[in-house]
Image (cartoon, rainbow, N blue to C red; front, side, top):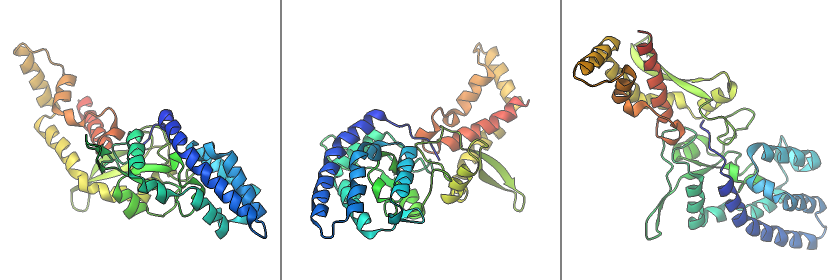
Length: 316
């Protein structure tokens, strides 16, 4: 739901680290496959393609990965069924080359990877922290989980792809998403969508019980992709537990409605303090003025609630 800026330096670092590992596995697998009888020529050709396009596979952006997937489906249709690799032998060979289990077991490398990503809040929900923490003595404490946007079990070719390893929280990665499939044509991908361009929050009073509610509304630019992602991660339901943010904004508004705010501005001026209405609003709603919502916990919610309440001040 939130944009992750593609970090070219981090991607280049990742490629330099992963390239020799994957190349060794490719060479070893090709050597073994060439000795098999009968010789699995199509599998060997497929892996030769992987070898030639290794850089694109490891650090290509999401659309590049999908272009590779489409090209391979057209080139080797016999390996695929319903758009996924159905050949067990090829699947097994790709799992050996792009071994995510080996990646995740290398704690030091995984911690450096997530630290370089610079993602501190889950891009799917914006309310789970995804900090990478390492002590001064080098001991690792915590790092975010890594979600495969294209599931590892269904897309083994992209199990180690930089843009397919999304730093995320436990709720979104393991409880909600797990092995379920999303696609860049139908859902928001963090490395594709424009920052803050997918949806916004609105608050309303539920008619049936006069209770304050929150709703995430997809913006016209993103349309069904944002709506699908909102529903996929059950954000409308989950965010009701964060209604206190909206309640706090409303409490401040009740204490300082537009006419009261004007009175305070006049009073301060009489006391010799030249404070504008805008400056006083910034003081009152300081914690809700968010410049980078994707970098702060509940940043988008706080930002949208302030924008919503600001309209009431501007209407006066």
